[in-house]
Amino acid sequence: MLRVTKLTDYASVVLTVLASEPDAVLSATGLAERAGLETPTVAKVLKPLAQAGLVEAFRGANGGYRLARAPTDISLIEIVEAIEGPLGMTECSVHAGACGIENSCTARANWRRINDVVADALRGVTLAEMVGPPTPKAPGRKTIAATLATN
Image (cartoon, rainbow, N blue to C red):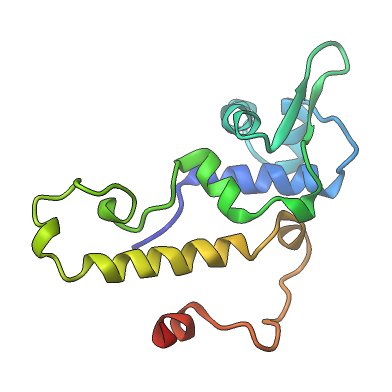
């Protein structure tokens, strides 16, 4: 089964809380309460999110965290890569030379194509969209399967 890690899922939840109050500076404890997560877990995801430039940290008595950019300017690919590193469906999708059968493998090019489609799909969804209810698929937007079939 292909899935993001729990930390990536938690990071998206924390960011949706921040996106719902974009001007507020919220403590890790406050974020944890609003997100329904444990404070240590929230603190753990905030560090890489800050390093990736997705949140800003403020020190002091009124310190905390807020989004570094508008929710419309943060894509899901940025969230995934902040926590997990570069998106790679397979090791060879990201790093050439990581596999002993790379030279004779006919699947590698297809895995790279699938990797690109998934990355594009994640780029196409913003944090702002994650805050609201799901939107119906826009006319003209292809599903991942349809995109793969035409490529």
